Amino acid sequence: MTKSELIAAVAAETGESKTKVEAFYAAQALVMRKALKEGDDFPMPGVGKFSAAKRDAREARNPSTGETIKVPAKTVVKFKVAHDLAVAVNYRAA
Image 1 (cartoon, one colour):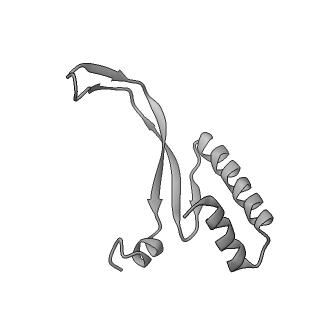
Image 2 (cartoon, helix red, strand yellow):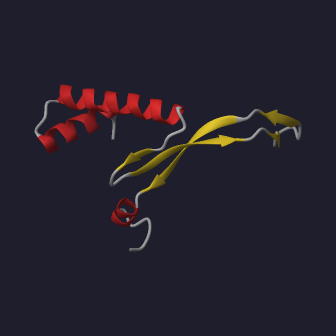
C-alpha cells in the first residue's frame, strides 16, 4: 500500500477529507519523531509501540574481505506489534 492509497482508504473509512487525513498523518509523524528523539515510547493503540534504543559501539567483520571495522554507537527505532494485530494477521496464536 502506498501513502496515497493509505490516505484514500482512511478518508473513505472515516468520511474525512483526504486533506485532513494527510494533515493528521503529518502531525502524527512529527509527534512520533519528537517523542522518540526525547527517548519516549510512541504507542499506536491496536497497532503496536515504537521505542528508541541505544546500540553500543562494536566491532564487526566485513564478510567480503574479512577486515574488522568499528561500528559507532547509535540510537535505533524498535517496534513491538500489539497482541490484537498479531492475532488478526495470524502472526501469533490467540
